[in-house]
Length: 218
Image (cartoon, rainbow, N blue to C red):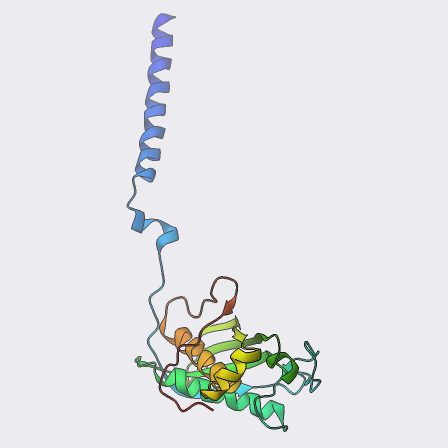
């Protein structure tokens, strides 16, 4: 009986040692080799084309209130076709940001707008607010159309100046159009050149716009 108990104790001890060794090996694995630390490499893209879609199913609001309804609210151009005006902003942004990507793989950037809610006159010249911009970006092969990245829903909100700050910014040429174009250009560039793509800052709203180039303010 004593011998049986001794053998059982040895078996249990060996089992415990085995479990302990496995657990120790896992705990002592190099930090950089753990699955959560594996990151994708940065893409190597070069812009050769673009498609910007601003669906006419999106609603446009011209109400001069603090927070009008509508998918598209834009006052940075003279009254006109807001769909075409917003499309032109995105095309300029893709050309600027994408043009700075010096990768090896030729790509087409595809944009589909979901929301473009800038500030009305009433908001801009009083309390200020948020330029709320949502779109889907897909990067594809120019020949086959195969998707190389995306589709990715991007929320590219930007602080909109108000009151005296807005007036001072406009005096320096920093209009809504200029700031939004530069902001979107940087978003596009990050999507084309970084492993993570564009990541909204904490709080989800970008406060400062750092111009990519010395483009003349619009």
